[in-house]
Image 1: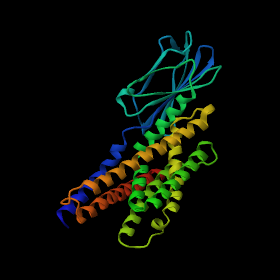
Image 2: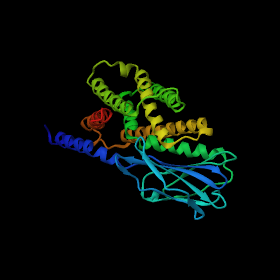
Image 3: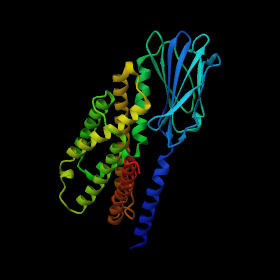
Image 4: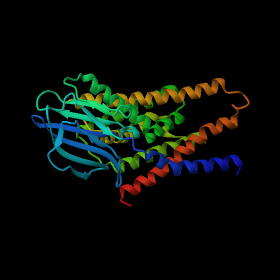
Length: 340
């Protein structure tokens, strides 16, 4: 084994070991629902992401005129801590600042959902760089659209398993027309299951779905190696078929993320549409970035570097990384699904 090969194996092992730790930095948004139950009296529901017994140290700081009428009640539900309480706010809560304490120290945002006794509900996004929100008296539909578009784009760009699948497709399918067909099939498929799950037409447990998503990534990595070795492959010949099948699975994963974020009931179709558009926007940004890097390499790399051996390593390294990482995820998620 050459020194370069040994270094490659060590690097892949380190990546597989540290990938879960890197992904452990929480990126799911917190969710705050404020529902007016009688004039100037509100029920609060505060949902913060958690890993095991650990939750993000995020706290809601109410307006100064708000006073709790009872002790908050907390429970753990599906990887999140949910706290509920009721507060009376003199003069109402509209137009007054609501702060999320410690949000600026995290990688996540918070979604605020306000449901008044009269009038349309309002949905706001509270960002880490500006952790204070003010509920407006009126809100245009574009606020909901922009909020869920950004959330969709962030989810795909920070969803390393989904990006690995797309990257594997790029490495497997080198014909532009077939690649376009495969990406389109993936888009159509995950849009179907995202909508079906969001509206409650189909339900699947998230743990097995996440394990099969990892399996889909590992499968494509194996197919790349087979094709590069000169073997026939139905996946390479009909990439849209595999993309559509696995896209259905990835749609369940997107739906799980959207379910954790929370949906405005009166604007669910609008939020779903723009979340999906955000996912597609993020996916296209990633594909464009990869294709740009490939073009720049072929166009401007010096001949002393752009050799057949370097070119061979250029595709082998990402395929090995994809295979090793997805295999680790498969084992980890399968054990989690089995409760081991």
